[in-house]
Length: 559
Image: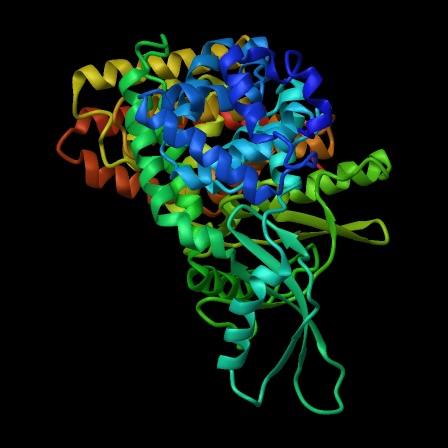
């Protein structure tokens, strides 16, 4: 906050602070010879403040005051009241783990903001150089039904990341370009085209040969500060998992799975830092989707290095920027996105299907060619693969929920997890109770279909059931996509689409008797020592087929 606004120090944003904290932070802004101090002077003063607090054993209290400036506790809407203490304490824990120099920067960033800064801007200033917290905010903001102000603050974390300049990226890019040798010419445009939590993208031109038109490309590299701090940040994230899990009972959150969400954050960060892995994924995706005109994927060029990915440049509009589109175009855009991300991975009859593991709004753009939309997928650090039995499992779980077939859901989960749910009687009883709860929620419409699928996976995991990494990634992708589709077209009935997708996939397979044979074969391998169970499974499938036929006749057809 500027020094001429210090007269407002007892109002927002400082009304959360103790008088001593207000005085301490205002000292950082004290004029030098009647002028506003330089940023370097402010940071030196803030570092002295922190050293003094550490020597007096009040460093955590000081950090708590820094977090309080952001109004973080007030930002959470009433529907998340039970998480307010968790969020504040978790933030205090993470910020406290920072070296004093980085913590001093955060104090200076807060006091330099204008008095009129929004809560979202203050929150961003607090975590702008902490990819783990930025990524966590992105995961949360994908959830439909969030309080509008809360969602806006979180979306700001995704849309307004500006932590690096071209001059900071230049040494790395020039070094990598020179390593290619004199035969290759790449000329960066000396600006940042896009920036995410981990990487930044610089537009450039690559010359194939003299006299030919240069190719428009982008250069993607990990931001220097991220690469420098990532190892320490991942250690901090591991400690945060332990901190939250040890205190969840204190907050009255029972078996809430903090580690599950934070492990997802960790995987995302590790994948984004590993450019070589993403380069392999780009090659796989390009071959998999081929010449499909409904979607576009940047092509990795041979000029790429382990520290710099060189890709063809594909420009588009962010997937959630749709206010200028007609309702018809928004519907087509949502429908195409659902087909690519939901339907294709479970309909593909190849041995293995491929899908985008992190389809959040920042990773997807679009263009229109006439009335037909074309989806553009960026950032392929998270690439998922589903084997045929796994995709058939998703169809069966979906249909089992729709028709309230508890035994079908149970046996499907048991087969895909190699009898994890049936070997222990206590677990079997608990799993059946969870299934009944999910079916009841579905029938009473207290949960949508996608929410019910998420509920089953989450509660099964709490019971110790282990699903494959890729199946969990697909389920998480469905949850992520739910929020994106809601932003693209709020009238698009995602649950109806899931029903239709499951039905068409299942019936297509049944007609050809392909995956039905596969699941019976797997069932026989698992239950051959129990004829009673095998007979029960066959009976369940038989009645299920009749129910599917009846449902199919009633189901409205999708365009």
